[in-house]
Length: 239
Image (cartoon, rainbow, N blue to C red; front, side):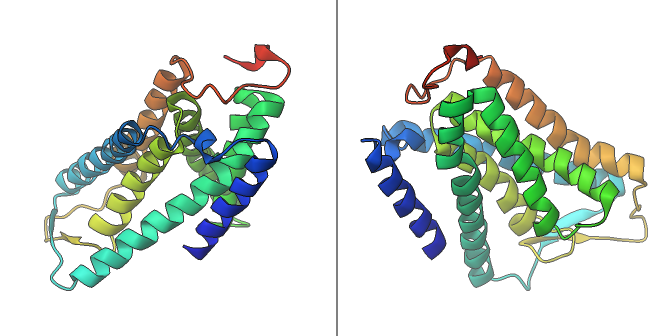
């Protein structure tokens, strides 16, 4: 949290030199922005719920309340997922993206930051050196990074991107946990199936990819709402 506060303070100082404030990240009007935050959160939360229900149905197991998972763990997980999401959004989707948009235009700025977001996950996921996984992680996380970035530029607020990001991480890591470390744990039986690569991909991986593509398609056909996001010179950068 201290790091996030430091980033916000640093961005505020940098923006003051431009005679602007933090609202270039879209924090006002507050009621509307909170609605967009919740819209993003529940969109990916519902996606995660549906995927995990489908996963349980396909592999023939059920999700059950984890008796070893207490309120302290839930609150700690809530804090940690929110804090990590805010950190990543501050780093990849606020000031840097804002400045790149001014310099290069929306499309190039989003492509650059999404690519860096994908590379960043090589390190956080621990697959550096595993080239097939690196290619896959670059595509998968880069695609979601692109969705978050367009969410920021076209909805006019970073809160929508935070909502999308947090809704997925919270439900995927804290509510459902395939390793049994979440609020709900998988209850297997003799009938439980171990899905092959094709079935596992269709059930757990393809839906998030399609979701991101649909959201990106919708957002790219939506007029940008944040009017402070304007390239300094070439307006042809705007889609």
